[in-house]
Image (tube, rainbow, N blue to C red; front, side, top):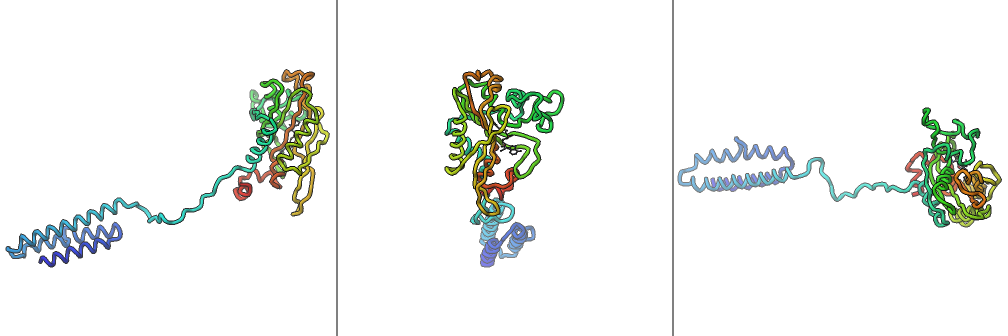
Amino acid sequence: MLAELDTMEREALDELGAVADAAALEAYRVRWLGTNGRLRGAMDALKTVPKESKPAVGKRLNEVKAAIEAAFNARRDTAAAAPKGPPVDVTEPGLPVGEGARHVLAKTIDEIVDVLGRMGFAVADGPELEDEWHNFNALNIPDSHPARGPADNFFLGGEVAGKLLLRTQTSTVQIRAMETMKPPLKVCAIGRVYRPDAHDATHYSMFHQVEGLYVDRRVSMVDLKSTLVQFAKAFFGPEAEIRLRPSFFPFTEPSAELDMKMRVMRNGVPEWRWIELGGCGMVDPNVFKSVGIDPEEWTGFAFGLGIERVAMRKYGIGDIRLLFENDARFLRQFA
Ligand code: FA5
Protein backbone atom coordinates (compact mmCIF):
# COMPACT_ATOMS: atom_id res chain seq x y z
CA MET A 1 0.00 0.00 0.00
CA LEU A 2 2.87 2.41 0.79
CA ALA A 3 4.32 1.84 -2.69
CA GLU A 4 0.90 2.44 -4.22
CA LEU A 5 0.65 5.74 -2.36
CA ASP A 6 4.03 6.84 -3.77
CA THR A 7 2.84 6.03 -7.31
CA MET A 8 -0.43 7.81 -6.70
CA GLU A 9 1.32 10.96 -5.50
CA ARG A 10 3.63 11.05 -8.54
CA GLU A 11 0.71 10.43 -10.89
CA ALA A 12 -1.39 13.18 -9.29
CA LEU A 13 1.41 15.75 -9.44
CA ASP A 14 2.33 14.83 -13.04
CA GLU A 15 -1.27 15.16 -14.12
CA LEU A 16 -1.57 18.56 -12.43
CA GLY A 17 1.46 19.73 -14.36
CA ALA A 18 -0.32 18.91 -17.62
CA VAL A 19 -3.51 20.85 -16.75
CA ALA A 20 -3.90 23.56 -19.43
CA ASP A 21 -7.01 25.55 -18.62
CA ALA A 22 -9.74 26.23 -16.07
CA ALA A 23 -11.99 23.40 -17.31
CA ALA A 24 -9.15 20.86 -17.05
CA LEU A 25 -8.33 22.09 -13.54
CA GLU A 26 -11.92 21.58 -12.41
CA ALA A 27 -11.97 18.08 -13.92
CA TYR A 28 -8.75 17.39 -12.05
CA ARG A 29 -10.28 18.58 -8.76
CA VAL A 30 -13.27 16.27 -9.22
CA ARG A 31 -11.07 13.32 -10.20
CA TRP A 32 -8.60 13.64 -7.31
CA LEU A 33 -10.16 15.70 -4.53
CA GLY A 34 -13.91 15.18 -5.13
CA THR A 35 -16.21 13.12 -2.90
CA ASN A 36 -15.82 10.14 -5.24
CA GLY A 37 -12.24 11.00 -6.14
CA ARG A 38 -9.06 8.96 -5.97
CA LEU A 39 -8.01 10.30 -2.53
CA ARG A 40 -11.39 9.44 -1.07
CA GLY A 41 -10.98 5.95 -2.53
CA ALA A 42 -7.54 5.60 -0.92
CA MET A 43 -9.01 6.65 2.44
CA ASP A 44 -11.72 4.02 2.13
CA ALA A 45 -9.05 1.43 1.28
CA LEU A 46 -7.26 2.26 4.55
CA LYS A 47 -9.97 0.28 6.32
CA THR A 48 -8.75 -2.93 4.70
CA VAL A 49 -5.11 -2.37 5.70
CA PRO A 50 -3.88 -4.79 8.47
CA LYS A 51 -4.01 -3.22 11.89
CA GLU A 52 -0.22 -3.15 12.45
CA SER A 53 0.40 -1.27 9.15
CA LYS A 54 -2.40 1.23 9.66
CA PRO A 55 -0.41 4.02 11.50
CA ALA A 56 2.34 4.08 8.85
CA VAL A 57 -0.03 3.90 5.89
CA GLY A 58 -2.40 6.44 7.47
CA LYS A 59 0.48 8.85 8.05
CA ARG A 60 1.72 8.44 4.48
CA LEU A 61 -1.80 8.86 3.10
CA ASN A 62 -2.17 12.15 4.99
CA GLU A 63 1.15 13.35 3.54
CA VAL A 64 0.08 12.44 0.00
CA LYS A 65 -3.31 14.15 0.50
CA ALA A 66 -1.63 17.32 1.85
CA ALA A 67 0.86 17.37 -1.03
CA ILE A 68 -1.84 17.01 -3.70
CA GLU A 69 -4.09 19.62 -2.05
CA ALA A 70 -1.21 22.11 -1.69
CA ALA A 71 -0.17 21.63 -5.32
CA PHE A 72 -3.78 22.00 -6.49
CA ASN A 73 -4.32 25.18 -4.44
CA ALA A 74 -1.13 26.73 -5.77
CA ARG A 75 -2.15 25.91 -9.34
CA ARG A 76 -5.63 27.38 -8.79
CA ASP A 77 -4.19 30.61 -7.33
CA THR A 78 -1.86 31.04 -10.31
CA ALA A 79 -4.76 30.54 -12.71
CA ALA A 80 -6.88 33.14 -10.84
CA ALA A 81 -4.08 35.71 -11.03
CA ALA A 82 -3.49 35.15 -14.74
CA PRO A 83 -5.05 37.78 -17.07
CA LYS A 84 -8.40 36.88 -18.61
CA GLY A 85 -9.02 37.03 -22.34
CA PRO A 86 -6.87 35.93 -25.26
CA PRO A 87 -3.19 35.45 -24.61
CA VAL A 88 -1.04 38.53 -25.22
CA ASP A 89 2.35 38.30 -26.84
CA VAL A 90 4.25 41.08 -25.12
CA THR A 91 7.20 40.64 -27.46
CA GLU A 92 5.16 41.37 -30.60
CA PRO A 93 6.14 44.73 -32.22
CA GLY A 94 3.47 47.44 -31.77
CA LEU A 95 1.33 48.88 -34.57
CA PRO A 96 2.69 52.21 -35.84
CA VAL A 97 0.64 55.20 -34.64
CA GLY A 98 0.31 58.00 -37.22
CA GLU A 99 2.03 61.18 -36.03
CA GLY A 100 0.07 64.41 -36.06
CA ALA A 101 1.46 67.53 -37.74
CA ARG A 102 0.61 71.20 -38.23
CA HIS A 103 -2.04 71.87 -40.88
CA VAL A 104 -0.47 73.49 -43.96
CA LEU A 105 -2.56 76.60 -43.31
CA ALA A 106 -1.42 76.83 -39.68
CA LYS A 107 2.14 76.36 -40.90
CA THR A 108 1.73 79.19 -43.42
CA ILE A 109 0.32 81.45 -40.69
CA ASP A 110 3.29 80.68 -38.43
CA GLU A 111 5.68 81.51 -41.27
CA ILE A 112 3.90 84.80 -42.10
CA VAL A 113 3.88 85.91 -38.44
CA ASP A 114 7.54 84.97 -38.20
CA VAL A 115 8.55 87.03 -41.25
CA LEU A 116 6.40 90.04 -40.31
CA GLY A 117 7.64 89.79 -36.72
CA ARG A 118 11.22 90.06 -37.93
CA MET A 119 10.16 93.11 -39.96
CA GLY A 120 8.92 94.80 -36.79
CA PHE A 121 5.16 94.11 -36.96
CA ALA A 122 3.53 93.34 -33.59
CA VAL A 123 0.52 91.02 -33.63
CA ALA A 124 -2.88 92.67 -33.04
CA ASP A 125 -6.26 90.96 -32.73
CA GLY A 126 -9.97 91.58 -33.12
CA PRO A 127 -13.27 89.67 -32.93
CA GLU A 128 -14.72 87.62 -35.80
CA LEU A 129 -18.21 88.82 -34.87
CA GLU A 130 -18.08 92.52 -35.63
CA ASP A 131 -20.24 95.62 -35.58
CA GLU A 132 -20.87 97.75 -38.65
CA TRP A 133 -18.68 100.54 -37.32
CA HIS A 134 -15.48 98.47 -37.44
CA ASN A 135 -16.34 96.50 -40.59
CA PHE A 136 -17.66 99.48 -42.62
CA ASN A 137 -18.17 103.02 -41.27
CA ALA A 138 -14.77 103.56 -39.71
CA LEU A 139 -13.24 102.12 -42.90
CA ASN A 140 -14.90 104.88 -44.93
CA ILE A 141 -17.56 102.55 -46.34
CA PRO A 142 -20.76 104.66 -46.10
CA ASP A 143 -24.26 103.29 -45.28
CA SER A 144 -25.25 103.47 -48.95
CA HIS A 145 -22.31 101.36 -50.20
CA PRO A 146 -23.43 98.26 -52.14
CA ALA A 147 -20.87 96.05 -50.35
CA ARG A 148 -22.97 96.46 -47.16
CA GLY A 149 -25.93 94.51 -48.49
CA PRO A 150 -27.12 91.11 -47.20
CA ALA A 151 -25.90 89.40 -50.40
CA ASP A 152 -22.28 90.24 -49.54
CA ASN A 153 -22.30 89.68 -45.78
CA PHE A 154 -23.29 87.19 -43.09
CA PHE A 155 -25.44 89.34 -40.77
CA LEU A 156 -26.65 87.86 -37.54
CA GLY A 157 -30.39 87.14 -37.68
CA GLY A 158 -33.05 88.97 -35.64
CA GLU A 159 -33.89 92.63 -35.08
CA VAL A 160 -31.47 93.28 -32.23
CA ALA A 161 -28.57 91.30 -33.67
CA GLY A 162 -29.18 92.73 -37.16
CA LYS A 163 -26.27 95.10 -36.89
CA LEU A 164 -23.68 92.45 -36.09
CA LEU A 165 -21.98 90.45 -38.79
CA LEU A 166 -19.15 87.99 -39.33
CA ARG A 167 -16.30 90.26 -40.42
CA THR A 168 -15.57 90.24 -44.14
CA GLN A 169 -11.98 91.45 -43.83
CA THR A 170 -9.24 91.80 -41.24
CA SER A 171 -9.14 95.56 -41.98
CA THR A 172 -11.46 95.76 -38.93
CA VAL A 173 -8.34 95.19 -36.81
CA GLN A 174 -6.72 98.32 -38.29
CA ILE A 175 -9.54 100.30 -36.68
CA ARG A 176 -9.34 98.41 -33.38
CA ALA A 177 -5.57 98.91 -33.21
CA MET A 178 -5.78 102.64 -33.95
CA GLU A 179 -8.60 103.05 -31.41
CA THR A 180 -6.47 101.58 -28.65
CA MET A 181 -2.89 102.53 -29.56
CA LYS A 182 -1.29 105.86 -30.27
CA PRO A 183 0.89 106.25 -33.38
CA PRO A 184 3.55 105.43 -34.37
CA LEU A 185 2.35 101.86 -34.66
CA LYS A 186 3.26 98.84 -36.75
CA VAL A 187 0.92 95.88 -36.39
CA CYS A 188 -0.24 92.83 -38.27
CA ALA A 189 -3.40 90.79 -37.74
CA ILE A 190 -4.20 87.27 -38.81
CA GLY A 191 -7.67 85.81 -38.72
CA ARG A 192 -10.72 84.26 -40.26
CA VAL A 193 -13.06 86.30 -42.43
CA TYR A 194 -16.42 85.32 -43.93
CA ARG A 195 -18.14 86.08 -47.23
CA PRO A 196 -21.13 84.46 -48.93
CA ASP A 197 -18.96 83.55 -51.94
CA ALA A 198 -19.70 80.36 -53.89
CA HIS A 199 -17.02 77.72 -53.39
CA ASP A 200 -14.69 77.11 -56.31
CA ALA A 201 -10.98 76.45 -56.83
CA THR A 202 -9.95 79.89 -55.50
CA HIS A 203 -12.92 80.99 -53.34
CA TYR A 204 -14.33 79.79 -50.05
CA SER A 205 -16.98 81.28 -47.75
CA MET A 206 -14.57 81.30 -44.81
CA PHE A 207 -10.92 82.10 -45.37
CA HIS A 208 -8.00 83.81 -43.65
CA GLN A 209 -6.40 87.17 -44.20
CA VAL A 210 -3.24 88.80 -42.95
CA GLU A 211 -3.46 92.53 -42.43
CA GLY A 212 -0.52 94.91 -42.05
CA LEU A 213 -0.70 98.49 -40.81
CA TYR A 214 2.11 101.01 -40.34
CA VAL A 215 1.36 104.51 -39.11
CA ASP A 216 4.12 107.07 -38.59
CA ARG A 217 5.20 110.48 -39.77
CA ARG A 218 6.00 110.74 -43.50
CA VAL A 219 5.20 107.12 -44.41
CA SER A 220 5.07 106.86 -48.19
CA MET A 221 4.09 104.50 -50.99
CA VAL A 222 7.81 103.68 -51.29
CA ASP A 223 7.74 102.29 -47.73
CA LEU A 224 4.71 100.20 -48.65
CA LYS A 225 6.27 98.76 -51.76
CA SER A 226 9.65 98.05 -50.16
CA THR A 227 7.90 96.35 -47.22
CA LEU A 228 5.94 94.11 -49.59
CA VAL A 229 9.06 93.31 -51.64
CA GLN A 230 10.95 92.44 -48.48
CA PHE A 231 8.07 90.26 -47.24
CA ALA A 232 7.79 88.46 -50.58
CA LYS A 233 11.49 87.67 -50.78
CA ALA A 234 11.69 86.53 -47.15
CA PHE A 235 8.58 84.37 -47.46
CA PHE A 236 8.79 82.97 -50.99
CA GLY A 237 12.52 83.22 -51.65
CA PRO A 238 14.94 85.71 -53.22
CA GLU A 239 13.59 85.26 -56.75
CA ALA A 240 10.06 86.42 -55.77
CA GLU A 241 8.85 89.53 -57.62
CA ILE A 242 5.83 91.72 -56.92
CA ARG A 243 3.95 94.43 -58.76
CA LEU A 244 1.30 96.91 -57.66
CA ARG A 245 -1.66 97.59 -59.95
CA PRO A 246 -3.84 100.68 -59.39
CA SER A 247 -7.11 99.72 -57.74
CA PHE A 248 -9.75 101.06 -55.36
CA PHE A 249 -10.52 100.44 -51.68
CA PRO A 250 -12.61 102.96 -49.68
CA PHE A 251 -10.11 102.92 -46.81
CA THR A 252 -6.90 103.57 -48.77
CA GLU A 253 -5.93 106.33 -51.17
CA PRO A 254 -4.15 105.63 -53.43
CA SER A 255 -4.99 101.92 -53.51
CA ALA A 256 -3.34 99.04 -55.31
CA GLU A 257 -3.75 95.37 -55.98
CA LEU A 258 -0.71 93.28 -55.05
CA ASP A 259 0.37 90.68 -57.59
CA MET A 260 3.22 88.27 -57.21
CA LYS A 261 5.15 86.62 -59.99
CA MET A 262 5.29 82.96 -59.28
CA ARG A 263 6.34 79.73 -60.78
CA VAL A 264 3.19 77.69 -61.25
CA MET A 265 2.87 74.24 -62.74
CA ARG A 266 0.63 74.09 -65.85
CA ASN A 267 0.09 70.55 -67.12
CA GLY A 268 3.33 69.48 -65.49
CA VAL A 269 5.28 72.36 -67.08
CA PRO A 270 6.53 75.21 -64.88
CA GLU A 271 5.69 78.73 -66.01
CA TRP A 272 5.90 82.21 -64.49
CA ARG A 273 2.64 84.05 -63.87
CA TRP A 274 1.37 87.09 -61.99
CA ILE A 275 -1.02 86.03 -59.22
CA GLU A 276 -3.20 88.41 -57.18
CA LEU A 277 -2.60 88.02 -53.46
CA GLY A 278 -4.38 91.02 -51.94
CA GLY A 279 -4.92 94.74 -51.70
CA CYS A 280 -2.97 97.62 -50.22
CA GLY A 281 -2.61 101.38 -50.17
CA MET A 282 -2.05 104.52 -48.12
CA VAL A 283 -4.46 104.91 -45.20
CA ASP A 284 -7.28 107.25 -46.25
CA PRO A 285 -7.44 110.51 -44.19
CA ASN A 286 -11.12 109.75 -43.45
CA VAL A 287 -10.07 106.52 -41.67
CA PHE A 288 -7.60 108.48 -39.51
CA LYS A 289 -10.36 110.97 -38.66
CA SER A 290 -12.77 108.21 -37.64
CA VAL A 291 -10.30 106.97 -35.00
CA GLY A 292 -9.18 110.43 -33.86
CA ILE A 293 -5.73 110.47 -35.47
CA ASP A 294 -4.71 113.75 -37.10
CA PRO A 295 -4.13 113.08 -40.84
CA GLU A 296 -2.08 116.25 -41.14
CA GLU A 297 0.50 114.82 -38.77
CA TRP A 298 0.30 111.10 -39.44
CA THR A 299 0.45 108.97 -42.56
CA GLY A 300 0.33 105.22 -43.00
CA PHE A 301 0.07 102.25 -45.26
CA ALA A 302 -2.01 99.08 -44.99
CA PHE A 303 -2.21 95.79 -46.81
CA GLY A 304 -4.44 92.73 -46.65
CA LEU A 305 -3.62 89.38 -48.25
CA GLY A 306 -5.60 86.15 -48.57
CA ILE A 307 -3.64 83.50 -46.66
CA GLU A 308 -5.13 80.54 -48.54
CA ARG A 309 -3.93 82.09 -51.80
CA VAL A 310 -0.48 82.63 -50.27
CA ALA A 311 -0.35 79.00 -49.03
CA MET A 312 -1.58 77.69 -52.37
CA ARG A 313 1.15 79.56 -54.18
CA LYS A 314 3.89 78.62 -51.79
CA TYR A 315 3.02 74.93 -51.66
CA GLY A 316 1.68 74.47 -55.20
CA ILE A 317 -1.90 73.66 -54.13
CA GLY A 318 -4.31 73.96 -57.05
CA ASP A 319 -7.68 74.04 -55.24
CA ILE A 320 -8.60 75.97 -52.08
CA ARG A 321 -11.17 73.30 -51.10
CA LEU A 322 -8.37 70.83 -50.40
CA LEU A 323 -7.39 73.01 -47.45
CA PHE A 324 -10.72 72.40 -45.71
CA GLU A 325 -11.47 68.76 -46.47
CA ASN A 326 -9.14 67.41 -43.80
CA ASP A 327 -8.10 64.49 -45.96
CA ALA A 328 -5.07 63.10 -44.13
CA ARG A 329 -3.55 61.84 -47.40
CA PHE A 330 -3.45 65.42 -48.69
CA LEU A 331 -2.31 67.01 -45.43
CA ARG A 332 0.47 64.45 -44.84
CA GLN A 333 2.37 65.84 -47.84
CA PHE A 334 3.13 69.05 -45.93
CA ALA A 335 3.98 67.47 -42.56
C1 FA5 B 1 -9.75 93.20 -48.88
O1 FA5 B 1 -10.33 92.36 -48.19
C2 FA5 B 1 -9.10 94.39 -48.30
N1 FA5 B 1 -9.45 94.47 -46.90
C3 FA5 B 1 -7.59 94.30 -48.48
C4 FA5 B 1 -6.88 95.56 -48.12
C5 FA5 B 1 -6.33 95.72 -46.86
C6 FA5 B 1 -6.77 96.62 -49.04
C7 FA5 B 1 -5.68 96.89 -46.50
C8 FA5 B 1 -6.13 97.78 -48.67
C9 FA5 B 1 -5.58 97.90 -47.43
P1 FA5 B 1 -10.16 91.88 -51.12
O2 FA5 B 1 -11.64 91.81 -50.99
O3 FA5 B 1 -9.62 92.06 -52.47
O4 FA5 B 1 -9.56 93.05 -50.22
O5 FA5 B 1 -9.55 90.56 -50.50
C10 FA5 B 1 -8.16 90.44 -50.28
C11 FA5 B 1 -7.68 89.05 -50.67
O6 FA5 B 1 -8.43 88.06 -49.97
C12 FA5 B 1 -7.89 88.69 -52.15
O7 FA5 B 1 -6.88 89.22 -52.94
C13 FA5 B 1 -7.80 87.18 -52.08
O8 FA5 B 1 -6.45 86.77 -51.98
C14 FA5 B 1 -8.48 86.88 -50.77
N2 FA5 B 1 -9.89 86.48 -50.98
C15 FA5 B 1 -10.95 87.28 -51.26
N3 FA5 B 1 -12.08 86.57 -51.33
C16 FA5 B 1 -11.75 85.28 -51.11
C17 FA5 B 1 -12.47 84.04 -51.04
N4 FA5 B 1 -13.79 83.97 -51.17
N5 FA5 B 1 -11.78 82.90 -50.76
C18 FA5 B 1 -10.44 82.96 -50.59
N6 FA5 B 1 -9.70 84.07 -50.62
C19 FA5 B 1 -10.34 85.23 -50.88
